[in-house]
Length: 405
Ligand SMILES: Nc1ncnc2c1ncn2[C@@H]1O[C@H](COP(=O)(O)OP(=O)(O)OP(=O)(O)O)[C@@H](O)[C@H]1O
Ligand SMILES: [Mg+2]
Image (tube, rainbow, N blue to C red):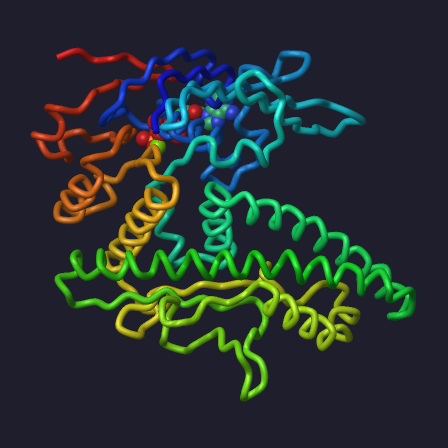
């Protein structure tokens, strides 16, 4: 898959951009703060409806648009896929009502209005970003976000379940707060209703995350072995936000200690949902006391282990960078397998992040990609042979100059 044309209006520091995009390796180079990352961000946003940064979507609209009656930003991509040509349009509008800004997102696919849900999967991307190191070292919320963004690109059912789960969770939490204010007294039938929706949708999230991690682990293990000179055995451990294991004779043993993700059997969502309902009943008192849902996929965690040691706690910088690279390349392989085509690759500052060996490995692995956008402030860090054949664009102050020769 590839983007053949990209048009941006009032997006970050791009006031207006009309860009024809060829297939192949495109190197975006330029000084700091010129718009290299913002261009990748725009493509990521069109693909996932999320920025790779944890920012409010309002920040994507250019400051230059602030003086307009309704500040807006528009992103349009023409995409060539194995299924044909598509036109994806997104408009962000910052509407003011009662002194509050409301952000409205309008989406059109081939000219017809669509929901965010319909957008996901239209463009598939795999990103390599400097901040990805936080996937190993940072807070659990980043890992959950990663799992959600990755799964939503490829699995409509997961995406629908996620949206329903998040909605139900906030309804349930609101009810818990009301009940808490009344000393735990009130109509419990509503709580029971939310429990069942939470369990059925949450079970799909857990099953999806589990399946993904198992696939990623299998692939990442091989890559990690290549990169670490066979010295390191990588495991991805999934720790669901409630104890899925049942009684001692139980059918489901979820957290299998050092077994990681790939050694465990597939879990049917219906069984997970049953167990989830039981677990919600068991912690009802605690939930009422605290006025919040204390268990569930919103508390899920995944850990990276090398030779049994938790990299989030013990990994060196270089080791963790290798792990993230292995994870991302695993994601790429997995996405290719299930969608049947290369996703668009967005590589932000990988030259500065990786040493020569890892850089060469990455470039070799992505050699067959249909379209790659790679940013760098320092093109000399990239292999000469690679630079000779790559398409080179210079980014300066929100404009892009195509270099010839
Ligand atoms: N909403 C916005 N409106 C206008 N400009 C913005 C907005 N948000 C960010 N910017 C600016 O856009 C510029 C480009 O940022 P970007 O992150 O794309 O730079 P970059 O070329 O990747 O730089 P670096 O090499 O430092 O990573 C920055 O100066 C940033 O402050
Ligand atoms: Mg940047």
